[in-house]
Length: 331
Ligand SMILES: O=C(O)CCC(=O)C(=O)O
Image (cartoon, rainbow, N blue to C red; front, side, top):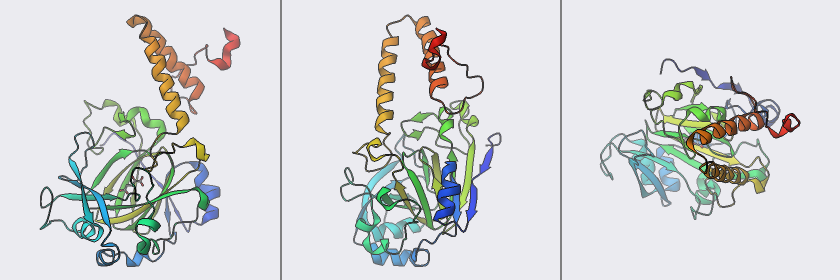
C-alpha cells in the first residue's frame, strides 16, 4: 500500500541481558535482537531431526485452503496430526496426503496438555526438543508464562492480533516478515476482539476500511537466529517467507493478579480492562434512555473525557472536557 508509511523495526546486535533490560525493554517498542544465543536448535532443527525427535506427539494444527488465514470466514480447519507428519507436510509445497487440497497450508501454534487450562510449554510437550532451545534470560524465570511452537508452511500468513503479555519471538529456521502496529493505532485497525478484520494488510479494501491507511506500519524480516521483542498490546501480523520453525516465549510483566487466571493463550484482556469495558457497556446502555440527538452529544462528551483522562498521548485535535474529574474545580 503506497500511501502507508513503513517504519523499519529497530535492530540491535550483541544483545545481552544488561542491554535488553536497561536500553531496549524500557522503550516498549518492538526490536529485532541479533546474535542472542538460542542453543543448538539453530543447527539441529532440520525437518528430519524434528520428525525423529517429536514424531509421536499429536498436535492440533490449522489447515488452510489458501495461505492467508481468514478468521472471519474460517477458511481453515483444525486437524490433528503426529508432530513429525505435520512438520513434513508443512515443509512441502504439494502433498500426496491432504485434508482439503494438495497445496493446502499448515500452521502450528502449540498448546498445553489440557489446551483449555494449561499454557504451552515446550519443556513439557516436547522435552527432547526443548533441550535444544535456550530461553533468552531477559526476564525473571518466575515470570515465565509459556513457550509456544510456531511452525508454518511457506507463504502462511497469520492475521493481525495483539497479546497481553510481553513476548520474545525466536525465528529458528526460515525467514519471516512481521508487520506491527502500535497499540495507539488500535482505532484504525477495525478490531474484532483481539484481531484486526483487515486481513489483506498489503492491499486492503480502502472502501471498507478507509481508516486503515492511518495506522503506522512497522516492519521487519526475521532471519534464522533472530529474536523479535513484541511488547504486550503491540499488534503483529506474520508472513512466512519460507517454511519456518519459531518459538515464542510469553512472560508476565504485570503483577500476577492483573491477568485472567483462565487464559492459557496469554491473550485475554487484563481483569481491570475487562471490568472497565463492562462498565462502559453499562454506561452506553444508560445513554440509550436519551433521544438520539442527546445520546450523540453525551457520547461525544464521554469520548472527550476518556481522551483527556486516560490517553497517555493526546491525538491531534483532542480537546479537553472541562467536566474531567481532574478539573472539577472548574464546574
Ligand atoms: O510467528 C508466528 O507465526 C506468530 C507469532 C505470534 O503471533 C506471537 O508470537 O504472538
